[in-house]
Structure formats: C-alpha cells, structure tokens
Length: 346
Image 1: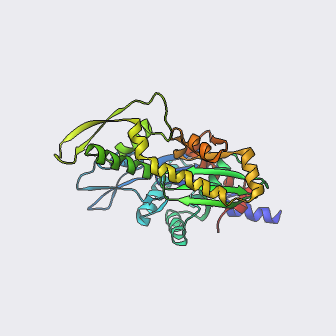
Image 2: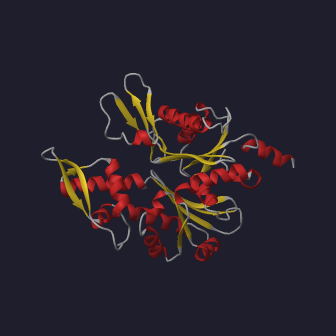
Image 3: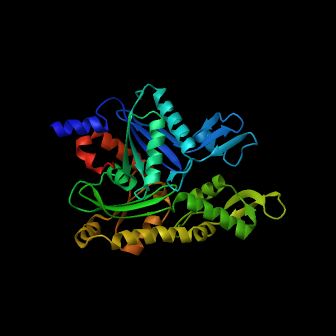
C-alpha cells in the first residue's frame, strides 16, 4: 500500500492534472475527470515589434503563409520535438490557460506528456523545461507509441505482444510492446508534414505552381491515398505561377498525390517492417494473431493500412479515434497510476 500511495502522489493523485499530446500538428490536453478540453493546432502568431501574442491554435494556423510584415506565425514543434523552446513555453502556457479559464486546472498541475520514443536527452530536457516554465508542478514523459497503445486499449501490461504504428505530424513511432515495455521500435521523422511538403514540391515541379503548406495539407486530406481508391476526383488547386508570378489554378489528380507521397509512404512501411524484424520470435507469433494497430492522424490516409497489410501479411486495424490515441493514453496513466506507473520515463 505504501508503494501505491507513493505512485499516486507521483503521477497525480491530487487535483485535476493534465495529460498532453504535444504534437507537431496539434496539441491536445486531457484534464483528469473532464476529458479532452484543448485540441488546437500547434501554432503561435506573434507581433514582431512587441513579441506579443496575436493568436494561438486554430486562429494562428489560419495565418500561416498569410501574415503581414508585422506578424509572425510560427510552429514551435518540428519533426515531433521542440524546435523553438521559447515559443513552445508560450504555447503550452496559453493552452493550459485555456483549460484554466474553465476552472478545470489547478495552479500547479502534474503533467504526463507524450514524447517520441527516439527523443534525445537534449530534446527531453527541452520538453520538461517548457512544461515547468508553463507552470507544471511535476512533469512525467511517456513514449508516444506506449501512450498510443494504452489509449487504443491494447493490453500493454501482459506478457503478449501488442504492435502500434503511430503516425503523427512530425514523426512516425512504431513499437512492439510487452509487459509495459518497448521490446522493439522504429522512430522516423517522416509523417504528415513530410507528406505535405512532398505534395507542394510535386505541384511545383509538375505544374510550375507554388502552393503553401496549408493548401498542400488540404490536397493530401481530400484526395491523398497510399493505395488506388475508387471515387476520388481531381481537384482545383490555386497558387502562384513560378515563372510569371501570377495567381492561377491547376487540376491535381489523386494519382498525382499518390505519386508525390510514394517515397515517404514507402519509408513508413519499411520502418514497420524493421520493427518486426527485430521482434523476438515468441512475440512475433502474438502479432500474427493480434495484428498491428494504427493510430495518429496518418492512420487516416486512405489505403495505408492496406499497404502495410500487403507488405507484412498481417492484419492491420485502425483505432476508432486515432487522432486522440496518445492523449487518451496519457489520461489513462493519470487515471490508473498504480497500473501504468512503470511506463513513465524518468
């Protein structure tokens, strides 16, 4: 009982503490006892002269590529980790304030934050520093594939293998988990943002048209796929002509987007195979029976589950709400500290 008491105190037996998915694309916050209260793009807009916050979250994302000389719209997270620690502190603090405005969060909350499994010590310190600067009392880090597996309801604490492929905005986290530990894994900085970049580069090369990242993301979401899909129609895409500099419109097909993203998709599939190749034989047998679970926004790419299934000859399932798998996992660690305390990083 004394051990369990210490665990409860450690990860949040007091007050309404926070589970956070500090993602490259979106930041989600779950307040214990109240559910997900923040789900906003990880973007901050600042005035250049005064360094004053102009907008944050969705409002700031709408400014990307559209700001004037007085305003900067920045993304503090890149490739799944903090790229600008000052802006990350501002963003985390403001998102916590949004939850606090509803009187759901105490002044010094305990926090469990999902981080990439391949995070460096420097990046780990940056995440913790940003959370403490934003007002956290205690900060505990949880590997994103572990958080995603817990959030998806996989039995991570049992002596059987669970495999998760978590495709976020900045990184893809792949792990085989058993007895609350990661047995084999692969972490690559190729995910949703890379696909957006590749779409924009392809449109520029083939159609001599410059488009922004928001437009590229929209094209990917509307007609992107990793496998031929019936019913997808070409769409009009507006941008600026590379040669003349004049705005114009081109028609981009689903085949264009599939060709543009083929290399990145192939690397995600290859990373999945690498994680399987280093899995112990007994656990590999479990995966044959249980299959692979996909989480994260990238799980919604049409046909990607089929691509992975074809390459691995294993069943592939998509979590019922893949966009919130990680933050739900952090919340479950807060809700059940005695069950999940061993998965937390130091």
